[in-house]
Image 1 (tube, rainbow, N blue to C red):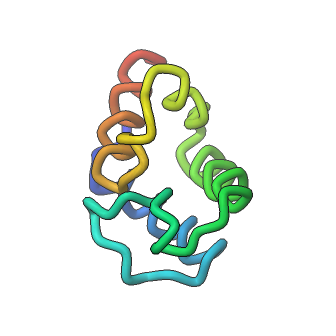
Image 2 (cartoon, rainbow, N blue to C red):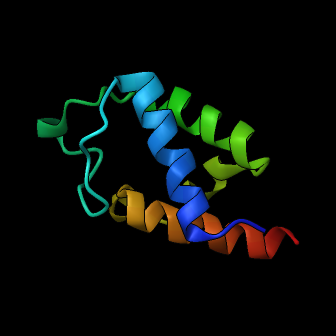
Image 3 (cartoon, one colour):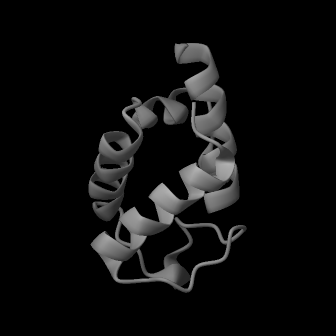
Length: 86
């Protein structure tokens, strides 16, 4: 099982690979238009995180609203998902 820090590293890596952005804080809402991440990019971001963590990360969207779309909240939701999958 991964820690929240390891999950955050995976999310940050995916964000950098897909968007080139490294300057996004843990509590920044990733879907905020001012951040500049295109909605389609989240398909690729989630794909990279899923491959890195070997978890169906997209399932966090089944039970959360847009509020989950921060690095901090995603890492916590993914951690919970990993606990359920065990």
